[in-house]
Length: 174
Image 1 (cartoon, rainbow, N blue to C red):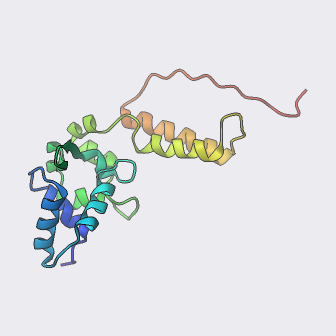
Image 2: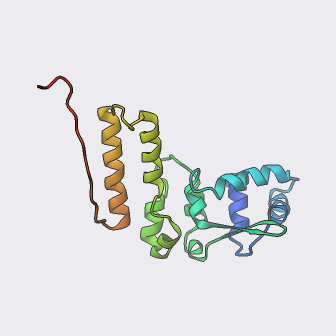
């Protein structure tokens, strides 16, 4: 049996179903690891895991601000996923990795926790910013990526009604 990562141990603690603050999570992870784990390490990992822009699992982690700090928990629908499937949602790559799309197909109730501008839209936004489309030129590859992102988002959302205004200028054509 392979040794679990700190991220996996934190997810196991969240899978207990009890909303907890980072000091409580740190204590439980330290017990599971059999050694002291620094609270700043757990806080850093929690910040990544609960951020949907950095990690798909972030859509499924509830982070509520209280007077004593943030309280973290998994949304109840996420308990229908296996621990391994939940771990996979923290990874961006990997052969046979369980994806957010697959999670929604397996547990349709998860969809309500995923904001419409999900993974694909976030990636498309980065592409638009990098290529400087506002009045600038867009490479063929960037345009294909943007279009592919839109199509993937449409499929993920189950279809959308879209109005598109497109202006194309050809240079050097009289």
